[in-house]
Structures are given as structure tokens and as C-alpha cells.
Length: 147
Image (cartoon, rainbow, N blue to C red; front, side):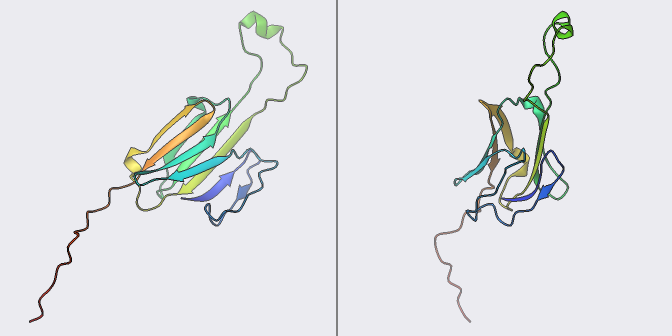
């Protein structure tokens, strides 16, 4: 899987050549969360750091080009609680802020796009992308007679 485009809260775009080339990308000053990509015989697994996020903060879809798009948006708007408590609420210090992230991943040809699964728990978004079953190759070599 290759990241196509990553958008941070400032609308800037980073282009990466290859996710698996071992390079470390500088994320200072962006809201791009850390991402792990794993693979086994049956599936690809993505883990994306999402502390404080809930399922309603995510939109995940396959776009027209067949790429996986993961969007996260978190708004921390004002004081929460009962109405009478909100009236008396004022921040003395506020470090929580609005954050938005969108990542487009180019999917390999061997994935089952119809059965992608995603869930968030304990501050981590997990996306499971199953692989298509490989056609069984016959073990025997078929000899063709030359006439």
C-alpha cells in the first residue's frame, strides 16, 4: 500500500514515493498521526494513532480511483456539560484544538475491497483489508505432447 496524498490541518499536501522504503518522514507541525502497516497471508492491517477519537470522528471509503481514503476530524468546541454549567465556563488555558487529517492509500490489486473492516478502540483505529484468495495452482506439471 502506498500513501498517495496526506492532508494536514493547513491544507498542505505531502507526496511520498514509497511507504515501505524505511525512510522516516518528518511530521513536526502537522496533525498526521502515526501509522503502522502490517501484512500476513490473509490480510493487510493498518493501525492509526487516534487518541481521544471515537467512531463518529472517522469517514473511511473507497474513492472513484479505487483507493482507500481515511479521514479524521476532531472538534473540541467549548465547555461540555449541563446548560447552566456551560454559561459559567471559561477557559483559563486551552490546548485542545481542532484537528483534521485525510490519508489516501493506493491499494494493491490483490485486496478484497468489498470486505474492508474498521474499528476504533483504546485510541487506535484498526483497518483490516482482506486479500483476495489466490487461485490454486496445480502441483503437477502438465506435459504437452508435440505432434
